[in-house]
Image (cartoon, rainbow, N blue to C red):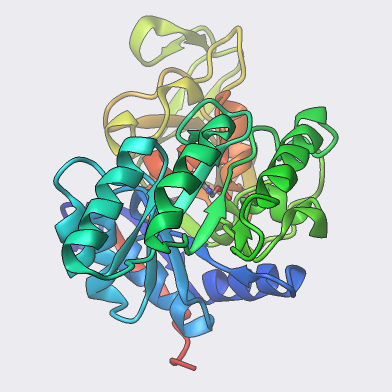
Length: 376
Ligand SMILES: *Cc1c(COP(=O)(O)O)cnc(C)c1O
């Protein structure tokens, strides 16, 4: 990612103290289980190395990445980390995993074979996780493959480090699929009696102790995102994104704003032109037309609507209601922060906070980190 350092453009500030507090808060909610940290997709856009160090300083020892490249970056940032790679093992990768002390999350019989072959070759039981599919039909061994896997491992005396599965509907705690998956996972555990187990993402963790087992795997909640739908979000906000005001100008009733002339002014207005657009990962679906409300920016104490189409580098906000309290060129407009949460912006354009975090934080901003805690 290119770094823009003049300080004159968009400003992205990541609160490392909030990351640490969020990790500790989740750790407290799951006292009987180890609390890992999921740091895939550049730690949900916040910066893999910085976020992982913040979690490690707060006490985290176990981390999940999606890709092996993320795992290598994490190994460099937090040398002592225990690292699980969710994408698992692809053919030929086992040597790299062993060399870097990474644990693959094995999700097919072929992956198990590949890993066991490496263990036999080196005569060492390298740790790995078995991922079973309990109803997601994404990655994972099928339940009926458990016996075949056990028959393959038993003669070698090999035991997995952990078994895990993933919930499809944890964000809706009353969804019956949660209970179905929990029951399947419980029955699977009978086949692996002494092996630690893990089922819960952020939402699963918040849905009660039944889901905790020996390790919980929160991601989005660590980054201040909403995990459970329909409940107040208890997590501290982590991300602050301000776009620069480039120009403030008057415009008249009946004039239109932006590409496609999709918004017609119904009053004489004051418009603020912000230096941010879809080229920065600001969703174009935050556009506000005359027919449909779009996203917002927070300026001088007020939430102001985006009007017209979000374009590549520019977005127009209606600041008429600020009266005499108009922003000046060079000042910042909050896109994400204390007043506008990632989920507010997500709701305004029909997506989820996860996508805002992993997309909108990639823009042309100067990035800074605040609130770092001293290593424990
Ligand atoms: C991404 C992911 C998580 C974390 O999920 P959140 O909803 O962000 O807490 C946990 N487990 C698996 C398998 C994942 O892919």
